[in-house]
Image 1 (tube, helix red, strand yellow):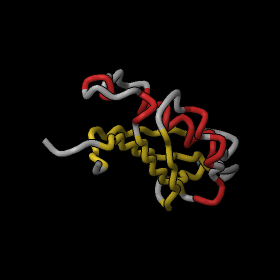
Image 2 (tube, rainbow, N blue to C red):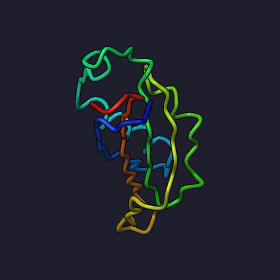
Image 3 (cartoon, helix red, strand yellow):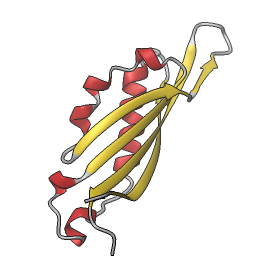
Length: 115
């Protein structure tokens, strides 16, 4: 059966003081997920575990995001996470560091035949 994209969700997360890109990415994912309660899989007669979840993270330092720590955020489905250059690093006015902003795009698909 073909993979059919069903939903897009978007979120933003920050690390205000620690420059923790992984935590900012986790917050962005939660921001996207917790805005909605979608019974997508059940609506099409699938189990929640059948959901294919593609996640794209945008961060100024993609190598600083530990994707293995993000997988546990998803309560069901099969997530795959990629990290790309994006987001923002905002310098603090006093020069003491930066505030990290990370974006997440979550696409949920199911393997199903076209109607």
